[in-house]
Image 1 (cartoon, rainbow, N blue to C red):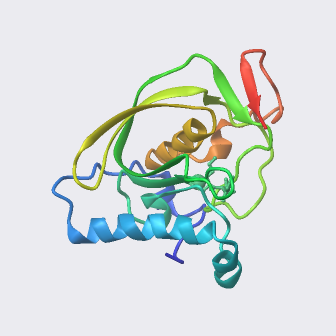
Image 2: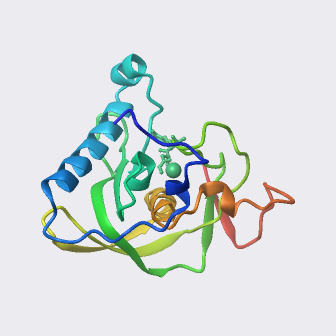
Amino acid sequence: MDDIIREGNPTLRARAQKVTFPLTAEIKTLAQEMMEFLENSQNPELAEKYKLRAGVGLAAPQVDKSLRMTAVLVPGEEGQPAIFKHVLINPTILSESVQMIALSEGEGCLSVDREVPGYVPRHDKIKLRWYDLDGQEHIERLKDYPAIVVQHEIDHLNGILFYDHINKDNPFATTDDMLLLE
Ligand code: FHF
Ligand code: ZN
């Protein structure tokens, strides 16, 4: 999984295709490799050895597969289990809060090799539906950091990059209806 594409590649701006079930062996392997990449990237020794940026999400379009599939691995506290660890197939946001939130540090992206400063407004809470590798439907409510990560990933499936959401005139503009997450 050392084949992450960068901005400028048109795959990152395309709307990705729905995944159909039953999954092909190729798609199952891809899903496993995407999650493995996140695990390795969060392992300090392996990240150093393979020069990986630590990632909490990876969407299939970022490895040049225009499919509606993403791996998400939000780590817990050190030594604690992950807060959210799933491969999401055909994820859909069923509803979202009016309340907005942004990471106080802004966002980055494995497909963007530069810092783009600014707040990226996201919905604070989402109700998410997805399918797992067995075709099982899942519906879960997410808030704060996991909700932010999932919205960044779903954006990739729709050809959107995080900086599309940054206010061009004032990147750190705040509205009084936006929470900031440290
Ligand atoms: C990241 N890394 O994972 C960023 C990039 C908000 O589409 O956030 O481009 F590894 C997916 C704890 C806290 C542990 C943060 C979504 C960002 C998604 C990947 N790292 C982290 C961590 C991180 C992107 N991406 C800066 C690489
Ligand atoms: Zn990204």
